[in-house]
Image (cartoon, rainbow, N blue to C red; front, side, top):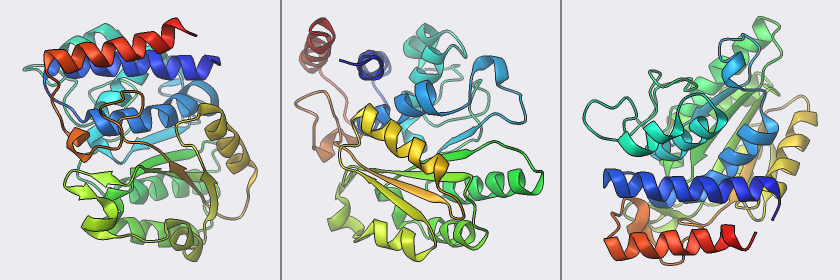
Length: 274
């Protein structure tokens, strides 16, 4: 197991602990997106607690803000704050680690949670970098269910129009949302073609839960000029916990004690075999 994959499983274990402590959160989406966050934060992006105020730091926006739990674990692991505090107090009274990203948490660039706005905000940040002749890149992670929101397409249109090659949008394509499959709820059909029509380079990652495949895609995106890039990451909701995988019920499920023990056992078995 390579270092990034190991990191992603350590973070999965943190997520399960956080969900068990809080009796809240969006565990299925957390487990599908965590490899994307791991690749970005620990290999790809120019971000660190030390450069948190640097004008040329890369920007990261979690548009699918209901998966804040995963982001909090990553930022804690990265050293922005004590990860233990986030894991133990998430979604509890008085905690700043609430159910959607908020800028009271060090390392969080925007408040998000009302779905569909991350791409548009990312366009603004990427355009500002162009206008100010700054070198930072902007990374947005959106959910496939979220792409039913119309403001995404306004953002995509603007990104293509302004040729924002410093913008990279990742779609966490796990095909599930709270009430069923994305195809049943609101079929977005061929997302790759939609992004291309709006003037994006498109990179499809066959296994969006493979950190190495993701890193290769993001490194390629840095080299592509003249257009923004969309990374379509084909992921598995609930990845890493057998009874959660590909189950819409785990969009917002709460584990029983038996399920919690099973999830811990499975993840620790992976880490033990590393």
